Amino acid sequence: MAAATPDQHKPGRRWHVAIFLAPAVLVYTAIMIIPLFSTLVQSLFNTVDGERAFVGLKNFQTLFGDPRWAASFWNALKNNVWFFVVHMLVQNPIGVLLAAILSNPNLRMRGFYRTAIFIPTILSFVIVGFVWKLILSPLWGIAPSMLDAIGLKHLFGSWLGQEGSALTTLALVSVWQFVGIPMMLIYAALLSIPDEVIEAAEIDGLTGMKQFFKIQLPLILPTVGIISILTFVGNFNAFDLIYVSQGAQAGPNFSTDLLGTLLYRTFFGFQLQLGDPNMGSTIATMMFLIILVGVAIYLFGIQTRLRRYQF
Amino acid sequence: MAIARSSLPRAIAAHAVLIAYTLIALFPVFVIVINAFKERRAIFNSPLALPNDETFSLIGFETVTQQGDFLLYFQNSLVVTVVSLTCVLLFGAMAAFALSEYRFRGNLLMGLYLALGIMIPIRLGTVAILQLMVATGLVNTLTALILVYTAQGLPLAIFILSEFMRTVSDDLKNAGRVDGLSEYRIFFTLVLPLVRPAMATVAVFTMIPIWNDLWFPLILAPAESTKTVTLGAQVFIGQFVTNWNAVLAALTLAIIPVLVLYLVFSRQLIRGITSGAVK
Image (cartoon, rainbow over all chains, first blue to last red):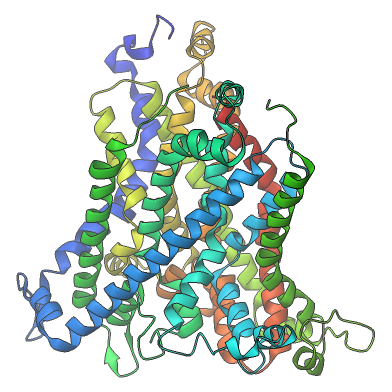
């Protein structure tokens, strides 16, 4: 808070502001904002008699009116919602639990645990998809023989191959992969709580679990909110894990189809169906709107109600 | 510092949970790596056994180095990741400095504009990005990937770095100004070194999605000469689906570079997180 702020520079001498901003703004605008906007616009166009023509909302009519399009869209959306629900219910509680244990300053080998638990997050989807397919395979799989060893073989099913369980299994694999991110962010948030707050709680006789739920948890809620919205955005454009483990067809029988795989198939085509950039743009626009609604709910409905504490 | 209150049973419980989860986290990696060094029959008969004198074999690695252009894929991935990361950190830090240091008309608006990309994934613009790359002749070049990943990484980088730069003391910068340093010198020699921990945090979170991305390599640069290691491994699995040795060896090789990069940065990452706490 020094008295002299740089604002006092004369306007003519402030080229450096533009120079500092230019590279980032140019790349970001040219590669991200303009294509995004252009994709939204293309959802209003289609090829009529070999020419590109403005068709208004007709693509959306096709998407929701044509039974085949509508069925795949709602199926993908429903699967995507479930994918997200599994993440919220499993990933975040595990992340909080691990971070809470790790934040204990007396714990030994914290660095090792932190590094080890974060390793799945750095692996590529190709590796993750392949290894879990191997582990869960009914033929070669390690899971059946491990269950056999403890006498629980009857519990095993080909989880990735059945319509009823494939999506949940993949969601759990994704949780396994990404649990490191909530863990790290919550760990950082827990470390930022001043020691005096914890000491005061201890003097008041709050320790252990009770202390965690009464003191730490309320203080890290904003971080949990940020993690939730990041998970939401990530889940609603997820594609890679499904593609590498089930292929673009998102089998069995489209039971693992997410909006991302639907977009890929529509835009790029598969088997006999040709790629369709306009319908692809239409689906991308729907994904954009869904994400926008989610972000808006977070920003106006949740974030403003969370109390932030300044230390 | 909390008083050393952690009783023995509680410490044991904490370690039990952490060890259990560490096993869950590392077990699949372990399975890949040990089986990569075994001969085919041993992979099927005893997948969990460590390789021994009888079962040890490097045949998978030989297949990989002979068959695929894996060395090239690695090189592509490294070039794309390192160049994109450099651009994100440099451009991101510059923009973050402009936003946090100078008051100018439209500052807040510019900050919001640049933050849009945190919430809206760049993938939704894929249709038009592909058209843009076709129009500019950049399809099947590493440049296309670098541009896309730079744009993808910038919003979060700018957001995090500008938060950190606000904490750099004004006195220091003004002392530099009194000494006659230009704004560029102040940025490069005074501010950048101070936000290094934050840069490391940003680097880790930027690097991982770039290295692992399958979507843009698949769409923008699927040619043999521009395949990244992620796409290469995916194609390789498709082609050699029955050759477990080769696939496992390829996957083992694919883990190494990103693991090394992560371990290099992770020290800084911890420092970044702790210094975030200190602020």
